[in-house]
Length: 118
Length: 106
Image 1: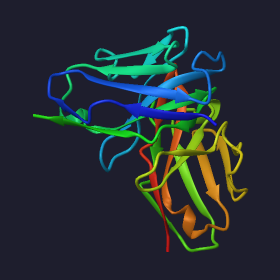
Image 2: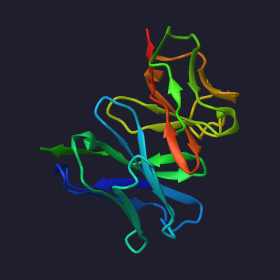
Image 3: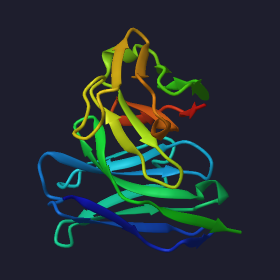
């Protein structure tokens, strides 16, 4: 059964870069069927898509975050990584990694809370 | 930019039908997915491609999508269905989520 697990610092200082990894088990990240994505949820608020990556390195990003976001994949480790630069308090959120199948996200990680400190 | 609009909340009595709507420009031309999120948990897809149910999702969850509105219907609502529900669609390779609807089972 597919499992995704986010990992990374829970606290990041303002203006620095947030970096999170998503480890995938029970399935190959190099599958030609799926894309892999990041979604976040500020405390008490709704879901916001950050971006997706295909194993060949093709990426799509939320236009509102595009200038600060990079997602890359490491097929040798079966994981993909989110980098978000110049963070502010508005980037405080639970960050989820997820698998995209065609037009929906069919598997999600448990999420990890990242807090941006002043 | 493309946006999806949901009503903030819906209340329903046990055993009754809850309808959750999601509105967006020409949404009927796109596939809509619906996610259920309970407190402290990750979202779970309950419908995809407008009306298809993943394995393990009860038949009481159904969906439709036409014009500018997609609808998630929960028939015979149970207490366990109390959760936040989010619609989601794609527009120009960008995933868009609705703001979410809190379903309260009274």
